[in-house]
Amino acid sequence: MEQEPPDVLSQRDPAPALAAPADFTDWVARRLPPLEHAARQLTGDDAQAAALARELLGLVAMRWPRLRANDAEHHAPPGAAADRLLQRLFAREAADAMPQHRVRLDLNRTPPARRPGRALPTTAEDEAAALWQRGRATTRRRLLIGGAVGAVALGAAGIRALTTGRDEGPAPLPALPTGPAPLDGVDEVPAVARQLTLPAALVAKLPRELAPGDPARLPALSARPTPRALAVLDAATGGGATGPLLVLGEDGGWRRVDKLPAAAAALLSPGALAPDGTRMAVVTADDLWVVESATGRARKYDAVPQSPVVVWLGPRHLLVAADQLLDVGTGALLPVPTGARDAIAPRRAAGTDAPSTVLELLSAGDPITAPPRVRTWEFDGRYHSEGTVAVTGPGAGRLGRFLGPGFAVAGGGDLVARMCEPMGLPVRADWRPAEAVAVLDPGAARVRRLLVADADVTGGLTLLGWLDRRRVLLSCGAGSGATPGVNQRVLVWDVRDGSLALVATVASGGGLSLADLDGAV
Image 1: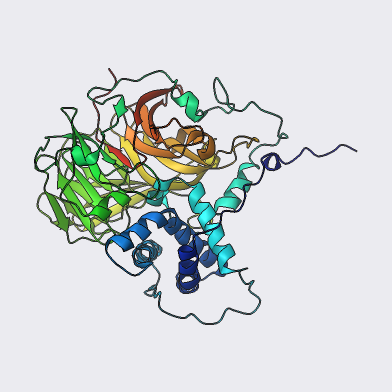
Image 2: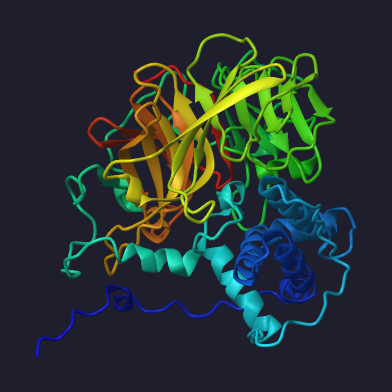
């Protein structure tokens, strides 16, 4: 009798359980019951409620050291910053779900007793440990891309789905390919050590090493402004540290942003810097701030964003939420038919007029039977129209849940790039493609190419935008085997042939945002 081939997932030794800190365990024990109750009111389904609650708690786990430090700095009760973040994340989900009645998360409420027949959690320690393990296994910047409610599977289910995409058995494969990816139109990010040996892509005015040095020794942006910023960087170097935010000017000098609250660095979005580099937008737990590069001044706006994701629809127009398109010059809030969660930020586009279109990439499974879709909104004042087209073709089935901000490049077919959870790709003993950058042609609603990564091997993947009309900018986090003093590598991916090149190394492990650059030299 022929033996079945071994499960490739079993070829990797299971990771040991990672105990959660005691204060996180205590916080989870107090917050999970009311959160799950509110999630049940929102979704109307026990399984979806449990999944949503743990998704949001996992996002908090990723930021726990920073949240703890924030409480200590402001002499707040333990868990206060975590409560604020959780309230914000839940409010965003509630706004996106648009329930018929208002659903509010009351963290001080004791929910009703659990329904008969439902499985009880093991212990608070086990629950917290599972959340902690998940948070630690995900890159720190994944807070910017988390939390969509829906019936799509979570981490473990997603990994299981990766093993179902091919009919043939899991034949042994090399650790990483040295040439083209094994699937047509699918490229792989190489391991950390190989990223440093990729061909160099020199970009005008952007240093090969983004190493600002000691932030305390840098001039303040308000004292040494710059007409245009090329990059903004969270100067965190490891652990639970954050900030301050640093700006790279056109003259090659770094400045320290001195007019923002300390908490602003914790939620730096890849899209924070406006395309022309004249402004950057950052989100704290409750506020939206915009900093002018030319003056260093920071302005707080009354608009309260529902997501830490920042989407510039032009050099001076910031998409905050539905019916909140902020003109940062006048402070006026203009009508807009959709919010920032799935909106695509246009890059390398000319003009400063108020936008009249918004493009979105919508995830498969949200709602449960929906395929991945391209949705286009056209609006003018109070009137708007929308058209939605399903993504088709051989690459459509490889698109799992979309993650974080997406970027469109003007001209050359107006391609769109956005991160997603890849589906149906082969899993090897030393390679689990758990995150990807997808490039789509929105006009044809087809996938052009996919770049996949295993965060354990490559470092966590973050999409940064477009270098030009054919090359995508991205960064990879520390990862296994990272060189001391190099916490990120900025890469450029050519969507014509799948080739990769090294743009720069980054000393900081914090968030990074780039303006529209001048292209390769």
